[in-house]
Amino acid sequence: MTQNYSRKIGDIIEQYSCIKINKKIVCSNCNHNIVINEVTKSVKCSLCNSTTELSDDFWKRLIKNSTSETLKCNDCKTEYKLDSIINAIEIGSALTCKNCNKSLPIRKLPENYFEKDNLKIISVFNEQKPNIEKPKDKKIISLECSNCGAPLETNGEEHTVLCNYCGTNNLLSPDLFTSSKQETYNPFYLFLFVNKWNFKEREIEEERKRKSKEEAIRNAVRKTKQKEKGKKTKKKIIIILGSIILASVILFDIWGMTDLISYKEYVEIDNTNYSYVQSNKNKKWGVLNNKTNKLVISTKYDRIDFIIDDMFWVRESSISKTVDTNEKIIPKNSYNITNILDKEYGLLSLNIDNDNWGLFLENNKKILSTDYKYIKTFDKYAEFSKDNETCIINTKGEIIFSKTNVEIISISGNTLKYKDIKANKINKIEF
Image (cartoon, rainbow, N blue to C red; front, side, top):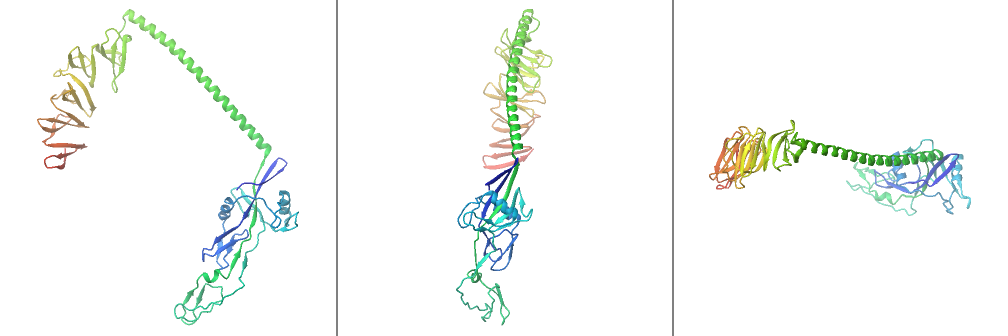
């Protein structure tokens, strides 16, 4: 619904709306159609005399779903001007058409009769009490008791009839009544107050909003310029610092005070205090302690791989070995480890020479046999194959499962699930 009338009084703009009501509802008792021809809080069914309440929410929905239209004379369809409508409402007289002198009934509703969500009905035009037409042709219908067949007597109004012979209460069909009473539509109009506002105050408010928007745009432009200026300043600072660092590197390199500034590459090792560094002088690799900023493994190796804790695998020319951060060789390991996998839960699987596999135990810092054909880790356990047996080992180096012709499906917690290939059966065991 939109406003279709407005008038200016001083600095105040008042807005009104007129809607046409042509509505019927269904009786909740007998399903008979009830025509609404007036603004009221309740209507009575002409068929069963039951009452249906018309709440404020009912009128609100009706108004919201209606379309505004101009108030017109019922006979000549001449449009009524707003001034004449307001004048008729104020003096409480009928609205007279200037063209045909026909009058349109008016009823001014009491103050706050209906006021909901800024909608207020202030007057009703052309409303009438329900017009019930009775047909001229009357039919005589013989009614019999549904129990004993005796004739029934009825006054034509009640829907139930008590048999005078057997005492049965007979319910009459609604069809007997719908043809006897018919309500006719009589459209009426609601005149509603919609809104009022001070147009000068609105102009001031709109001007304030416009200036606020312009100020926001200026602030955004100013911040953008400041940001660009900051970027340029930051870039200049970086260039200056870079020049200072470069000059320092050259000076320190000339003086031979430290090897730290002569690294070509610097790669931090995740979750450790160490970094791989490559010397600019000989292009070899070493290990740097990030906390002390000192080399713990000298830059003389072709390749270095972190194993765990303070252990590193290094290769110099064709010789491979495992060393600690004091560059002491860890015994019983002269293997060429080409890959290190799964550094969790204390079990590390090592790919030896791209063919055989080994297993490293974190607890006792040792590498088990390196002739396994494959190793697969399951959190705190590892699976490997040895002498045609499938084995499971824990972080202590203990083999807790060993069996031929089986396939490991999963290890969840301490539960092992495997398939017996010969028996074609799924088994479970607890560690």
